[in-house]
Image 1 (cartoon, one colour):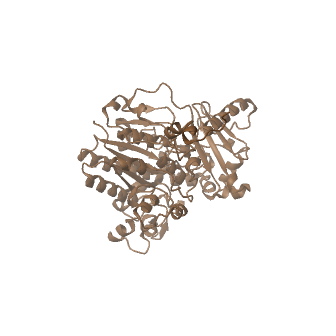
Image 2 (image 1 turned 180 degrees about the vertical axis):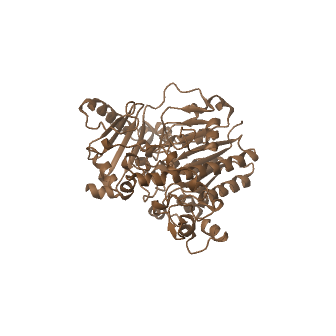
Image 3 (image 1 turned 120 degrees about the horizontal axis):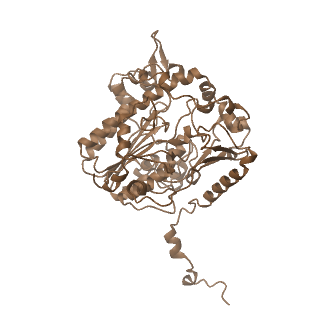
Length: 521
């Protein structure tokens, strides 16, 4: 083991924290990810800053909470003013590259106001969230010109105008019909695409080619898989690797449907939730979801084997995580977003090759950590300059290398803007009224819904979050305490973004030096 020269940042899309062998899943086999957990630290209570793809990723990339960076939904651009991973690491000489998904939407208004030409290298970086794009592929729809995947499919004999729809997310039914992966009833069928040509395999190929070509030059690679996010369709043999008997029990009961929270009720009215409320749907989708996770594990194994062959395991920090989870029918919900652990708690494994981390290898860390902690960790690892007046997370290196801090954060936070969802219309809300905040401590989880009653869960007696204490008279003091925590946190947000604290100190009480003598008698 040696010092860190490179960083491999692997992110999955919509992967639950409980769907790893190392996390205790009784049937799902993830030997390569389990091996990473043995070589590093698995953070058991890692929370994302939003349970939605885009805003969660922008928090990973900026080190800032969702309402701080302002990209609050998938359709909301990230401001060109926000600094991202590449802005911090590129000055160190690292090549900062992307293979896969970012969900970054270009800030076309900002580019125009700053006079940044659309075809310039700077504009290209800003469109990609500060990454040099090896192959940008956000998944979930036909790949655009920014990805080489359509041409790759065509070159391997997958015909038609849209091979992604026709082969990657389609299957052949027993009667010979071609059916779509958009319909969850088809999730147990094998995708028409061969496994070596699937999305996960293709993006891993791009990552392997990158690290092989880099040689001894330092690099940061964001390998961002689009799975196990829907469409829930896996290539053979992963489509049939697991059955309903291998799945975790559904985390829901009838009590959750008695006087439920109004916003949760509105979400349960969404089509995906209505379908996942049927047990047959969950039993059809969940085994394929597990197969997609197993496929990711196999390809992570390919990549780590490449790093070992190249001698890069000894100088590469490896991070494996996800942007959020997936309800898969738990709590009578589909998709993600709402603040149950199935949506906002994610897997996080960090492998630090530095010898100072030897004492933490194989440890399961129970302290609360957040997605925004990763960027400060990257910066400290390679000695890059940060921006304390912008970054809202804290480096995880003390938890990896020691000495372990005497104090650590007492709470984790997450945010939601559901203005773009049908729930807003159902509830008769205006876009600015669709906001919510979560604070989670060691024992309690509290959710503050703008314009609605709060939610409260006792994670000690109710770890499955089935009993909402948001209206319990006996828990009024706890709710007040948790609301105070939210207010204290809100007051500490990094909102002065144009001047650092050092610059503020330098400019403090200097008015007389500038010929300004107010208040003199």
